[in-house]
Length: 250
Image (cartoon, rainbow, N blue to C red; front, side, top):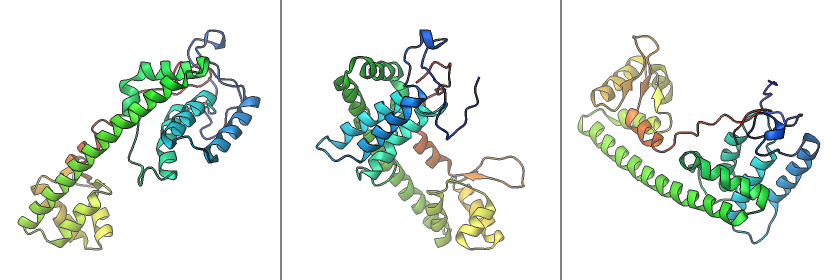
């Protein structure tokens, strides 16, 4: 097995599926052609034409996965590329849309569509599948946002009703940016004493907003568990092992 060399473009031939290159499902371009393919992909990223941005995003994703420029991490980076591209093009204000869970749910169809784009030039079905994923995940994002807003309103009201004070509300806001904290994190973030930070955490624990997720009394970590659970719904990553020279996944 060759070294994975994360972040470095591959210098050897890889393949997808099969025990060796002769039985592979798909063989990406060799290293000496890969660089030219990446150059063309970069130019397409910056090209200005009338192609709808979501269709263009689908084509970019499929092309990146076809080039397969790394020994490892092609799938993960290709999925991140979708989100970052949509932010860059102004479709998303924040990187809040991830297709990983959708692609996991429809994993075999994803592989089949990707392969038909590569071998048959069947872009229509591939783009249609991609756009269906965008619609599905967008609807999930809307529902997640509504659930988070409802949780914030509920917990803010509880903090105020129990007279925890303004510092408790501020802590809740920070927990929505960093849902796992130690007492020292609260001390630093809010600019309060260690004793005050410890008391704030204890009060939010009593309200079942925070839960201790480590054992013992030293270096304790606390989690805004309900918030984390909402964020995690439908976002489990694909359990894929991105290929090196002889692996079998996309």
